[in-house]
Amino acid sequence: MDHTDLYIDGQWRAGATGERFDVLNPATEDIIASVASADIADADAALDAAEAAMKDWAARTPRARSEVLRKAWELMTARLDHFAHIITLENGKAGADALGEATYAAEFFRWFAEEAVRADGLLTHAPASGARILVQHKPAGLAVLVTPWNYPAAMGTRKIAPALAAGCAVIIKPASETPLTMLALMPLLEEAGVPKGLVNVLPSKRSGALVDHMLHDPRVRVVSFTGSTGVGRKLLHAAADQVLKPAMELGGNAPLIVFEDADLDVAVEGAMLAKMRNLGEACTAANRFYIHADVADAFTAKFTARMTALKVGDGTDPTVDVGPLVNADTRDKVAAFVADAVAKGAKIECGGETPQNTGFFYPPTVLSHVPENADCVHDEIFGPVAAIQTFTDQDDVIRRANATEYGLVAYVFSENMKRALQVCERLEYGMVGLNRGLVSDPAAPFGGVKQSGLGREGGHEGMLEFMETQYISASW
Ligand code: NAD
Image 1 (cartoon, helix red, strand yellow):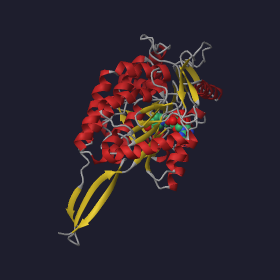
Image 2 (cartoon, protein in one colour):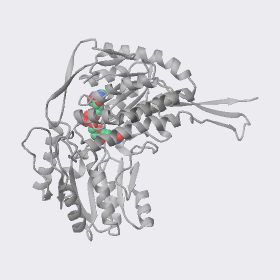
Image 3 (cartoon, helix red, strand yellow):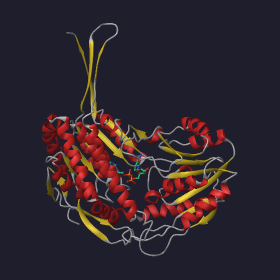
Image 4 (cartoon, protein in one colour):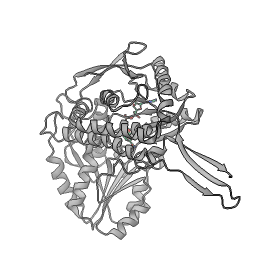
């Protein structure tokens, strides 16, 4: 790997303590890199660099910022295979999945290049006083970005691109399992014209202390986090001390509902995407399958056939459909969910056994007759296991789908649009996939309600997360 040091002020640095940590390839369990671990002094250096860089960047015209982002999209699009390969090596996802992520990640630069010039304000008359109301959006300040391992490129660009479009400087702390993709992106951003210090990358094995320190620096105004609800809560507590602007993309427990009037081929195709994109290691992964009793056998048979046909292996092999899980803990947690469901009465339709070979592999698994009290109905599985339950009554399935503290995404399959849209409106979720297994799109406001998060990424909303609204009351 070319870049394994900290990236601060446009320079590669070994870090104040000289400590490093290993990154593994989850398919082979080999160490692929030893990465510098940032400490408090490195965070301070990055904050100083970001503060200095932001002054000039925020003062540039929106068009000038936009053109740098557009260039980043062009450069990344020309090197998708390079980024896909690094993603596969450190995260494990198979080639096509990794290429899909790299493409999606690059699109955030193009989308926010287009949004950078549209931070529209407002001029109007106050109805009673007759004063003029002027509203404008200004860059919020330095932003601390913390990202998970499941999308090493896209979870970073989904935050960096809108922050830069808004005029902010950032310090990003990538997940310790997968820091290499974000480090590899930095030379590309330099080439695109991103000035020194505007984007800093601090991998660390002391994430808690490092991020907490930065969230208490008075120059920081935004914290944007993607990861588990538990860590999100901690960061919200820390953010309260300086009343930071929080954007939180947290966990999910997505229901996937197939009505008796669904097109079953469409439903199976959607279910494959919703369950197996990134091997189920996605906050958007379908976690609970609710299939109408009239079509449950037919759906389960078709879906199981598709799951059984997937080839599992090292993601660098182009014939492989799905790679390993990211680490042993994730694999063991998935196996425990299956063991718990089976002990409580679920039936294994396919998969369900941990292979004994090297690598953190787990086979695509379908469970039917999953009881309501199985752990996987209440917690994120984060792996390639589909837990199928049945229903007969529409109100009952909506109640069951909403019976969770999460509210990120739900999936609905029905050919009756009137019914389908009525159901979508009653689902307490920030996003719904209707006859589709994929909702993520840079042009759409991605995010959850309830304990799945605060704020939105992508769309127009994504840039406003990094801006403050100022109102001027004027007379002339
Ligand atoms: P995680 O919460 O363990 O880690 C996320 C990031 O936070 C990593 O960079 C980690 O090093 C850092 N971190 C851990 N403890 C910290 C602390 N005390 N202070 C500061 N930073 C800390 O999550 P993960 O296991 O990497 O990712 C899986 C989770 O992310 C799942 O729950 C998934 O649903 C969620 N996720 C959500 C979205 C979304 O958009 N809603 C997208 C992807 C993943």
